[in-house]
Length: 455
View 1 (cartoon, one colour):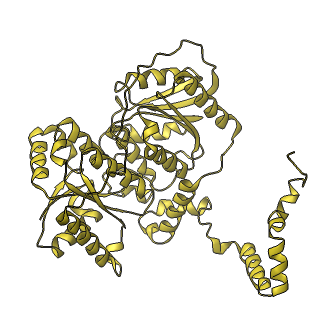
View 2 (tube, helix red, strand yellow; view 1 turned 30 degrees about the horizontal axis):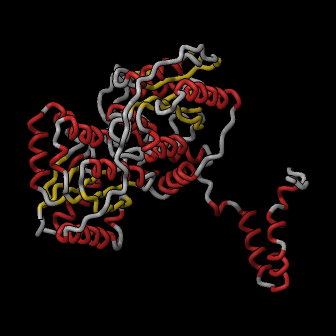
View 3 (cartoon, helix red, strand yellow; view 1 turned 90 degrees about the vertical axis):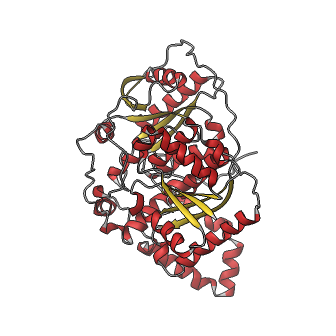
């Protein structure tokens, strides 16, 4: 059986993900696994139309398609994102229709589900049959049972291809027709803060208009235009930044300077146009390059809002990525404005007011599950061994109290022990159970008067 593997790492053959693929090649010699690196040589692929056509022919001849990629900021790497765009631009998408497909990822499981959901949606948009997903922690293959798991995944997928079983798609097709946006002309309320606006001009008239409108809501704005910004290249995954946050591209382009300059702003706006199921590959490059700060917040405490042109309401996964990533990076989420709204200017004004309130009041809304769990994943991974590769993370986590493990909460653990011990006595257990609801709010009596409310 012919399996075409698309490698999605900027490291190509030396990536961790590719070691999983090599193991499959060595242990399933009866199948022909053909590897095409889709991320590492992306600039060459952009310039070589014949190469893309040849890839289309390989897809046509394959029995199955395997996307094999590491995670870069809750998504595939910008190189693979650009390759996905080229499939449409070079019109080879029809070759994928009807093919059986699987996804193999490696990561530390920070928002791995959002990267998988993105590639699932892209694949189903191409008309493939999405069969299996294997999301491995980076070192799983080297651990007991790791090779067995990988082998079982592959056998299961091959059996599905051979049986011809068909699964219905899980992601809904995008149905969207853009309506031209024209500002109402009403003079916006001006808020006295400095806002950094990261956008990509020229890709959407609506986005350009919305950026201009929301900029009028603030006394001072600094525009960071990805269309004109000098970006020397994608994140290479070299991890040189791990020691002291010094990037390979330091002094060679404008990306790192842009992030550092954004720290001087009172609030941030990220403004993007939806291309397939995310922003553009150039936007993704800018996001990936945030990793010069590794797993520490690059813009900690900054209020952030999002201006989106495109079908955001149909893309809950995109919203989850933006909220999850920047929440975990300790930014304060102000909300979204989109050209899907009937009253676009009203949505823009509401976002501007929210951004201003966060900046002026210092209000820090409670974080939700993705941000809280993302931070714990980073904490555990760095403490558990990645500190050797990322000493800059280790220093930051120690300084800012991120190593807040449960075993350090001595008082809470002692209270839990005493309660467990007391619960072993039937009379005490019955009393506690009978009064559990009132006991649960005892500590609140210090701050809340116990008055009857309601009718």
